[in-house]
Image (cartoon, rainbow, N blue to C red; front, side):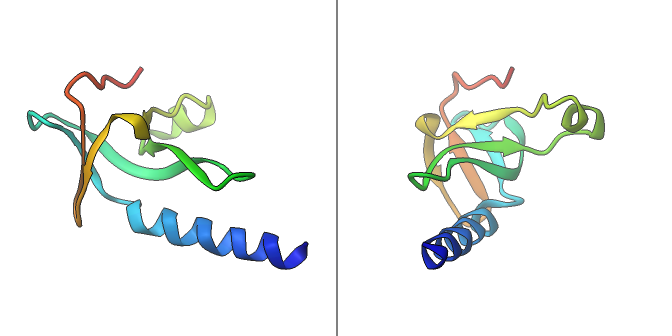
Length: 89
């Protein structure tokens, strides 16, 4: 059991590092933000969304903006392209 948790932690780190810092833009080119973290279901390993970097006040008040993975059209080396309809709350 401890070995499974260790492997899950490693997998989470790999996924997080792969997307941290990527720019998030819409299909039409509007920049939405930069990925700061992932929103994942750690029991299944599914990534549900990408948490955008925000200010200190947003983080302290737990008002991070999350882009759902269902809106992602493409993930490249430097950018994640999402549907034009995406407007973070």
